[in-house]
Image 1 (cartoon, one colour):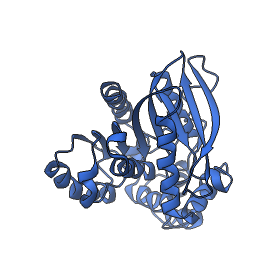
Image 2 (cartoon, one colour; image 1 turned 60 degrees about the vertical axis):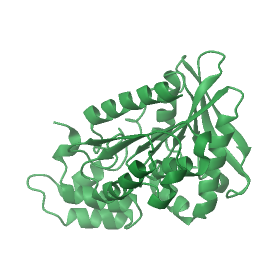
Image 3 (spheres, one colour; image 1 turned 90 degrees about the horizontal axis):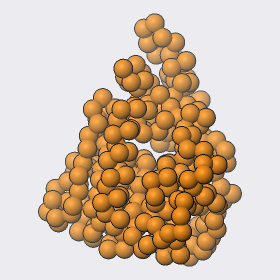
Image 4 (cartoon, one colour; image 1 turned 120 degrees about the vertical axis):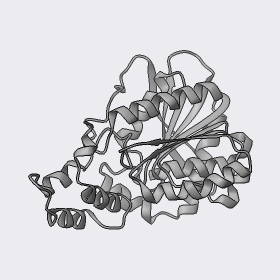
Amino acid sequence: MSKQLALDPRIVDLYDQYCHGAIDRREFLRRSAALSVGGFAALEMAMSLLPDYALAQTISFTDERIKPVYVDYPSPGGTSGMMRGYLVQPRGDGPFPAVLVIHENRGLNPYIEDVARRIAVEGFLALAPDGLAPVGGYPGNDDDGRALQAKLDQSKLRQDIVNSAMYLKSHPLSNGKLGAVGFCWGGGMVGHLAVTLGRDMNAGVPFYGPAPASENVAKIKAPLLIHLASNDERINASWSACEDALKQHKVSYTLHMYENTNHGFHNNSTPRYDETAANLAWERTIEFFKNNL
């Protein structure tokens, strides 16, 4: 049985509200502690949902198959005019197909950096931009990161991600083929990139991120591979509304619904992680990028 099946869905729902800024950490823990969860301590269950980034590392930053480095690059029209990201090069001289790795709503945390390394060991040039870089970067914890990201001008933040994609696409180590994968907020940004970049983007993989507005779907030229969690009604509703537009405009897409999973099932730093679903979604993601980039 996967970890997330043992979690009380009421606490998972509170955690989802906390993750997306509807309640703060104190309120999340207070409401969780007030619940009765059978033989389990409700507060202990709630605490277990908070990320443990020691669990997230699957590829060491010293792995000999990759060369990671932090890079700074211009970002006109963004938050400050400059951006910073985590660039991970596979072994070899390149050029390589390129994949942008887009974080959740809290900046470039260790889980997302590990995802960039996972992409690179598969032969892709990976860039994980830090949307918080113009205001000091990911602060070392998700609570402060979430608060920082929420305070940013969201249109400028989106421009920073668009500029990051174009920086990666034109990088000397890139073969000019661009893919993007994102999680939660970053999943929504994959859709935004697909709409904004048109034919400059070659493949997009949103993990449980909000769908692009139906009226913008006609601008999408890249094929999409969409990963959704069955217990994620809010996000799933946005894709249900979007599917008709995807079909109408003949956008190439494949949508996978992972049964008995929660929002965030790919993130191995919390008990919402579902190993079986995460591994299957990742295998499909790598195959999709190899076929399209």
